[in-house]
Length: 178
Image (tube, rainbow, N blue to C red):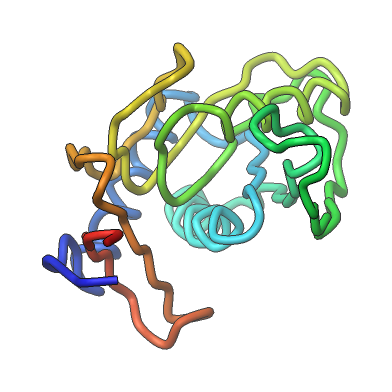
């Protein structure tokens, strides 16, 4: 992996999360009916950060869960070695505005799998999608409702989102896959 550049530093990430939180609040008329679900693994950190900003701004708790969409993916072969990390949803989704959170939006297959899993849990009022980085190259007709940054990439490039909690730094990098 050859780094090409840094797209966000810690301050940029914090500002992006704060802006996204305000957009989510405005788009949902507050957080009273909102529930967050982070896609394992890095989407969980995105959801945790969003939850913290939403609660700080609104002053009320926002339920949050996490799930592994591996069993719902359509791009894994029959012989794929799937490590299922489990899901933890401690609230009902019926009638809720569910905000699915992830770090990087690429082909759309992860979103399709996440929606399938949410629908197995119940009937939400709405399903929305928030992503820190949208890198393009959609294969399925999905878009993010809330996007931190659009970064057009080639298929030979990748995006590395690093979080203090998991990687020791807050930063977003673009790299050549080689």
